[in-house]
Length: 477
Image: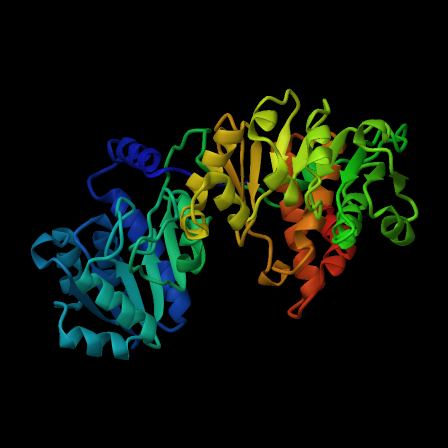
C-alpha cells in the first residue's frame, strides 16, 4: 500500500532521525537520491546544462548539494538564488568547490533556463503556503516554457503539501523526487497534476502506522476481493438491490445492473420502471415492480442513478437496515437527517458538482480543495463518501486515513460511467465489504476497466462494464 503523511508527521520523524545522525547526514542522503534521479533523467550527465532554482529553505540546500554531485560528473551547473543572503551556506560552498556557478534572478536567468537541459526546483519546501511570489513565479513560467526537463525537490513549489491545493502560481514538474514518504499533494489533485512522475527516495525515516492518505495497490485489492467458496450459493455470496432508472433515463438502470453483475455478489434484484429494458439486456436479473420493501431480501441497496424525481423510492431504501449506496439523483433527493440517522452503513458517491451542491459551495471550490471537501461531506452526513474525479477519494465519517485512487483514465469522463461504478461498488457492499473497502476497491477496478476499455480511444460506459472481469483477473493475477 502506498501511504502519505502530513508535514507535521514528516518533520517530527526528520527531527528524530537527525538527532541520531551526524550533522548534515540527512540532507546528504536526500541530495544523493536527488542527484541520482536527475542523472537518470538526463541520461548523459557530462556536458549537460543544469539550472538550480534555489530558495532559502532546506529544499534549496538539497538542490545545491545535488547540483554539486552533478557538477563533479561534468555537468555545467548554475544556481539561481532567489534570496542570496539566505541560501544554504554549506550547499552553496559545495557547489562552488565542484565548479558550479551562481546567478541571481535577472535577464541572465532567462537565458540560462532557455539553454538548460534540466531545471531543478528547490524554491519552496513542504511547509510553503499559497502561490509563488512574483520573482519565483516568473522563473517557474520560464522553466515551463523551456525545452528543459523540470525536477521538483520533494514537492513542486507553490503546491500545498497537506492538501494538494494550488492557490496561485506553481511549478509544473516532469518529475518530483520526494524524500522519506509521499506527501498528500503528490497523490491528490490538483497537486498531483503538477508533480509529474514521482520517485520516492528512502532516507530512513521512522514513521507511525497512522497515515494521512493511503492508496491501494494490486495486492491490497486482491486481498479484499470477495471470492466464492466451495459451499457458496447465490444467496450466500450476497444479493444487491438496484433501485434506479426512470422513464426518461432507463439506461442508467441497465448500466448500474451491468456493473453490479460483475461485482462479486451472487444475484442482482432490480426495482424500478426500467424493468423491461433491464431484463431484455440481462435476463439473469431478478426484476420486481413492487418497490424496494417488497422486492425480496438483499444485503445492500444502490439507489439514485437516473431516478429523476422519485424521492419516495430513495426514502424507502434509506429506511432499510442494510448498507446503502447513494448516487446521482439519490444524492439530491435524500433527506440529510435520514442519512445521518441510519444505523447501517451509507456510501455516498458524488462527483465534484454534486458535492458542491451538498456543501453549498461552488464546484471550483470542491475541485480546488478535494481533500477537505470529502472529509467535510463525510462528517456532515455521517456517511462514507467517495468523491469521484481524476483521483477518487474515499473518506469515513469517523476520520482516519483517506483512501485515494488514480487507476482511472480521462476516457472515463463519459455518460453512464458513474452508474457502472455504483452497481459494481454496491455489489461489493452486498458481498460483505465495508463501505470504505467497497468504495476504494470499486474505484480501483472501475479505473482499470476504463483503461482496458479505452486503450487510447473513446469508450462507452457499457464497454467499461464489459471489461471489469479483465480488470478483476489482472488484479488477482
